[in-house]
Image (tube, rainbow, N blue to C red):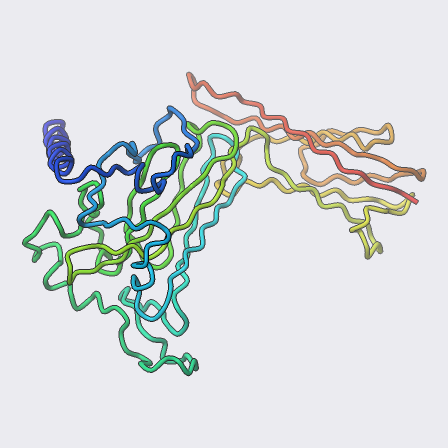
Length: 345
């Protein structure tokens, strides 16, 4: 088994070396647009990612600058817009998930086979081909499928020469997504929407930038055509992201943070942890209600009765004790604090 792994690695290195002679562009040159503005970087390696110093094959994956006129003709019937989002802010060592959704021109949609068709239900007067194909990629599989392609250096490969993964639904994935952050890149194929999760253990605290380039198949010219790019910030923090909702019975307007004395005020705490990193953590909620009263509880909900009028600033500290295996160098307590003003009358 170890010998097989060695041979696979050797073949990859050889292919990258061959590509290096054919093209000089590197991933960092393409994915940063040649800009001298440095993206946030960290010495830690992201699992499954590769250094952006690798060579980019511009013969198969052409790169166009933002004002290049070829962008106007990269997609039939209009312009494709990529919307990039993430579920941050993200607690360090948790996973951050990015989502990309391609907004196709009006009256176009992706069918079950991954082909792009004109929507038969669209009532747009500018659509003259309801139900017909915009891109019929399925019809090209006979020539460019895994077992029929005779030009392995041009079929089903990423910009660095690595082959596409042979997944069961590979016929339906006609878009190539190239992600870039931390001086590294990741490549995958997908449909008109894509999600990607990365662990933040090796990412420095602070704000960072994610960039994604999207290409489509163009079998007629043995190339992949760029159709959209998107970028967006994400945040890695060591403070537990929390939200506090304050309510009071019969108080219909809580947006002004004014509440009635001698009537219970309910504080509800919600921890932002979409990757469930803190799922098995022991959490405690320490309250200082600002009127001389304090409480400590394992419940995310606290109830307090203010017995006098005035302006108060309750404070909350949430601690999460995370179980880890012996020998793991991970702090077990994270203690953020939040403060919010309330007034009773």
